[in-house]
Amino acid sequence: MTETVIHLGFWELLIGSIVTMYMLIAGGWVLAKAGRSPLWILLLLFPYLNVLAVWAFAFIRWPFVDRAPASTQAMPVDES
Image (cartoon, rainbow, N blue to C red):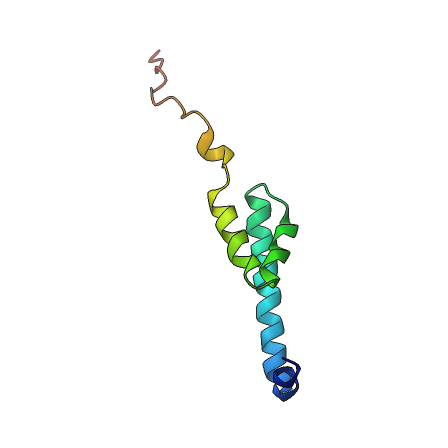
């Protein structure tokens, strides 16, 4: 592993770091919008654990989905 990092050039490391930071920031934002802790995004940094984390996130209970549907009846209009 260390040989691979040593043989990468400056630009490859810079681009890889930028892509990783973008992934973490965007994923944290998505988790926050979903009402979860943005720190869960750190699980994506660990191999194999990242697959389990994404799978668990996909199948958790969602309050938005569990809510009762809104009434579909229209409100009466007062034509005075």
